[in-house]
Length: 149
Image (tube, rainbow, N blue to C red; front, side):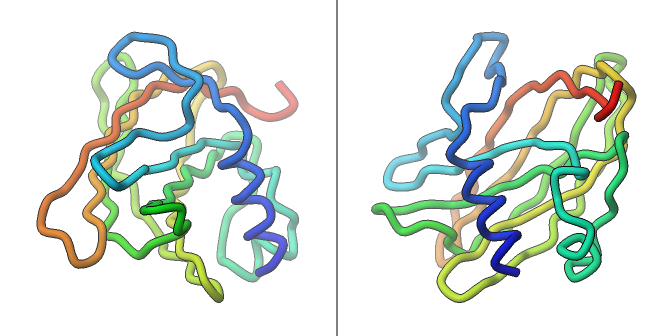
């Protein structure tokens, strides 16, 4: 589990290329008052095989992981209700099933998704921090590449 946490923190710290409302952005998060919702998308083959097995994750060149983490007042990995979908340019929607990964002092959420090479995907993620009634919507677009392609 420690390997997965290290990988998640690496993914959150790295700049991901996304566009929000058709504007280019290098920010890997969206702010909502006191909350920041961090998001990243990376190929599932970045996860070590033993870590994937331990967390029931599928590794494949045509599968990405969507990672969501909620931060408030510099406290990373707060519990939240996460749901969302992904849609391609033809407006075909794919429901995202997020799995909560809770480790010692952090919680984050992963969803797995199949994709085509160089497919452009629009993500819409609804986030409701634990103890809050208001949800926040994060939208970003990512061009996905199959590993080894």
